[in-house]
Image (cartoon, rainbow, N blue to C red; front, side, top):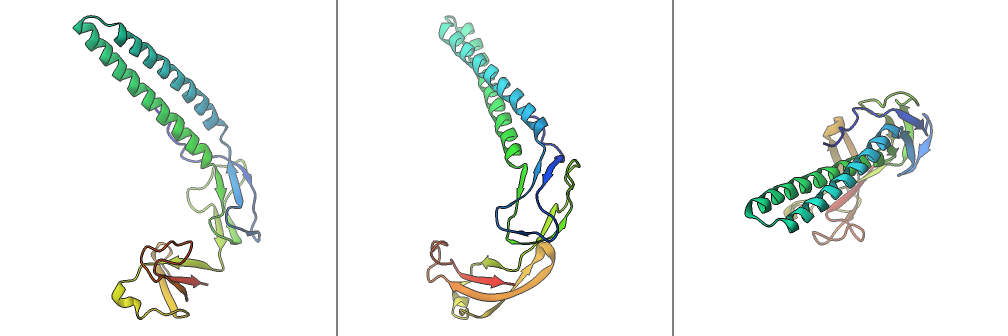
Length: 193
């Protein structure tokens, strides 16, 4: 079975402080993943062992000559396949945990709160709060309402996750639904403050 993800990571390093300005993708903090790396090494050994068991089971199936021996060899092979699948999942899960151990800025802005301390466990809530001066919202609009949406028009957006209403301006309108967002927006796009 795969080792369970830790409830919290111990913080190895905090790279920001209140008042710092960050860009999207900047590293905010990193977790100590020494224990996870140890679990990963063990999981990789388990995977190698499961793969050896599978090869042996396949050889046993090739060598089986009676109906009873073939049935037993198939059962052994299926069991070995399950062990390989479980071991691969364990390795993947642990690699994902290691990848997730670096906290990066999802938006550019000013760091207004840091609830991390190197050597302590990461908090269950917000670890770093970043005040972003602006953001872009892309939305779909019912075709019959699209004629009422204009560039430069004020837009209001309710962000239920933080119980806030924000305002902005319509900055782009895609002429065709499904347009490539890299070229033009699919529906109205509003920049907010």
